Image (tube, rainbow, N blue to C red):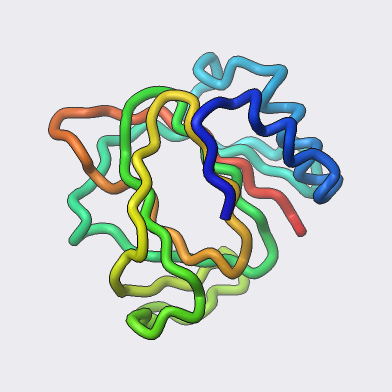
Length: 152
């Protein structure tokens, strides 16, 4: 997993994967706050999910992982916690087996780290990175977020 605090840092991660390059370029050349919440197919290999939500108490959150996609998660506005646990962590228990249609597997367990994600923070999440987004760190905070689903 890669975590960063400023969007221009994403340029460092170009040339890892051509689909990731497309997502990074799109992100750096568009004001995502102007995009209405929803799901957008940018091309056959990259989707954009634009969300507005109130983060949840950690007890109501869950860990998740993917097999076919890299996630690029960006907090555009607000603050949330972003939990991390490596796939080999022995505390992880699968709660929902792998769903091929949604490309997701869900878990419960203890976070190894919880990162504070604020305006302009991003996380690039690879298949081995078990992660828990949307954790409430402060009361009455509304988050505007973008998630790029990037086919590997």
